[in-house]
Length: 170
Image 1 (cartoon, rainbow, N blue to C red):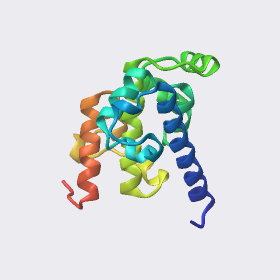
Image 2 (cartoon, rainbow, N blue to C red):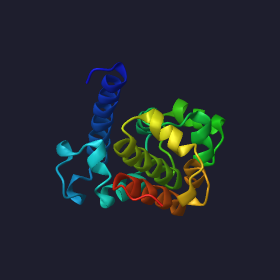
Image 3 (cartoon, helix red, strand yellow):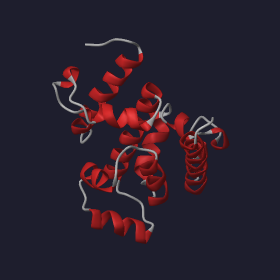
């Protein structure tokens, strides 16, 4: 790690790991998952669908959302559109430190998953953001970011990222 960006990303990853563990300890769901809570990481969370379901049902607290937001290429306006809420409502969540509804929590985790996979494929946020904002032939000439508003679109984007990662280009 030699760049400031890489060091900041590592710090953010550690904060995400701590926040996930903290949330799970508070919700007392350790008996419901098959992994010791202290061994969980943000990246590992995406491999445990049951854990994701629990987080969605519990509701993502603003503190976790804020860390996820800072770990994605999306600004507040993008998030407002993705979550289909106004920026003013987003600010209320921040002021009240409240949890998002399950429908919004699911979208937050979907975008976090896309970002996680995208960073694995492209290596950095700038390249991922460029890919998301560029019309893609394999995705019907749409920009991948345009498909992230629903689960089917998210699945298409993840499928394309997986193909790119395996060197399969359409």
